[in-house]
Image (cartoon, rainbow, N blue to C red):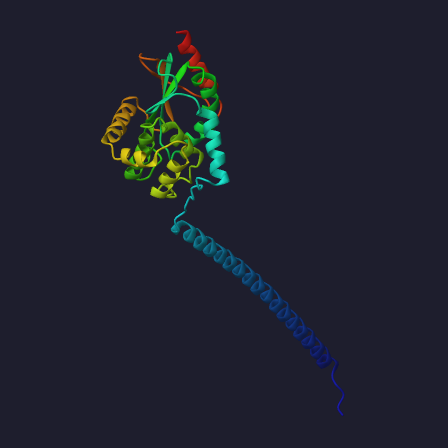
Length: 279
């Protein structure tokens, strides 16, 4: 066998090193490419997951929005209804009522309360600042409160007229404030369409001593429709755009807007009553 030239051996070793280096670089490149591919797949998977979650959320929201929310009125004989009636009776029981007026007709100070029975902010006032106002001033015969209607929260004008006249019709039996208070105590979720004939009838059934047939007949009395129109005109002339809104003054005299700071704290209203009593 012919001897291998040293130069050829060096060339062979060099070639092997270069080949090994090339193989190593190829392997490194493959690993790097694989890492990039895995990263991209992970990112894509994350995006897909986010999209899936978003789709699920949209479907849930759409499904929830498409269904009509309902409000089940408490059965007149149920424990919850009994509790609400007791609370209202504790607040206004024994206080004179006449139509939309709560309190002694000869009270020296008059406050007008403009409200929408579906207004959640009116509910905040009715369940918050109003009870102590009634106990401190109305029950003592120093203040009378007139409930006035102003459409703000009720979506459908026809529904507004129906619910407000239902309350006014109870006033023919000196029970309007019972009906109004129970409405606010059992108020459903805004824009859920809970006000229907069953709801209004259910409230009437809970008002102690209310003759249901007489109440039903009174609901068609056009006097109440005229009262709603008058209330709206007077509210507009005062620049009222929201509920609740209030006017107060000496009975028989001019009334001024009540500038309140809280609907749950009666302080602003107490101060307004005191100022008018001293005037």
